[in-house]
Length: 440
Ligand code: HSE
Image 1 (cartoon, rainbow, N blue to C red):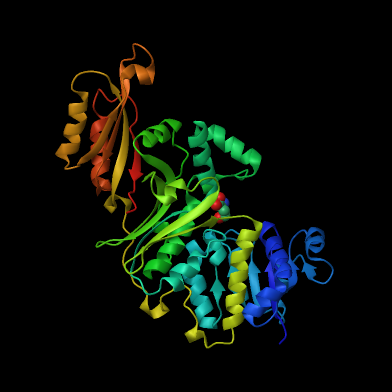
Image 2: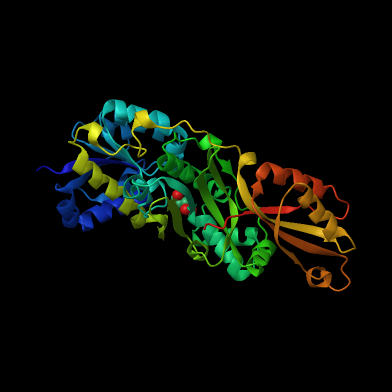
């Protein structure tokens, strides 16, 4: 049978990895797909560089629309990124009857509802394994491998840049700004790292996992997003003394009141496997009612790891493209007419536990005042750590750090208590609050 023909929009790191792995493992991939898969056309603004990557037998153009207009092309891979031209091209490819493979988490987390509806109406597939956790087949696991389960929660380290920074902060005792500069020098962080360090990239990925896990529409606008820019090395140290590591987690959870969808730094017990995921690696923990807790670990970015996910989608589409569209796996795991409208909860309704660090005057009654406010709000204390003042501030210091771990409470309640504590004259600096997840 004639190989399925693929057009590639954008041949950067992931595009060239996809081309190379497809070539290198051509025979093995064909034995799996039942048919050859060939990239026969590439669009890139730098035509000369693109041509040097793919060689003379592949047509290279600088106009992505020429790829979409080519009737020989069955599948379009979109690796341009962003919401602008990428969205227009994906919609045009769908309208032209092409299947689409994309690694574009931002596009799908924000515009997924429109894109999946257009694809369903046209009877084409939009596949996005590479959009979440790079080479880890987490979309496949959630959508197919765990399909028997009522999924209860997912918690993932789904941004390698921030995990690298947090690992370095912990290993070397350095502050965020210093490590960020080093990460940029080493190529682990981009020149503009905003999406990574502010948690936006992780929130895009968490949004997609949430939709697939619970059969709800993609709702990035409802996600709570907090990055790692305000984390201090001091909190990483105190967390360590209490038996925890701090990780940037993407969390989505089913509760009686609705779905939690949030990204923020979290204390995780050091004994959990996910707490020991270091450097730029990714890991996702999924809890299903039948299977229990499962863990997926691997490279979340990079040329060939991400290509591995892109090609898995190409193989899926190659196997299924002649199937009746109604018999294919739904884009978001649940049949489009069986999606749920259960609400994503506002952050004030989320229930979790907390690490609090208060810089307090080292004088009689302070601990009683602080714990009194917690007791008054019905917040139960799990652990307290207070350093001797001179350990924290040098000999003769008159202030100290008071660290409190709480049991679970509503975020709205915790906001109120923190505001009350902040008003105490003996609390000398802004209170640090980091959420804590036991993941058990
Ligand atoms: N910038 C992402 C990360 C990789 O650091 O994990 C692509 O999503």
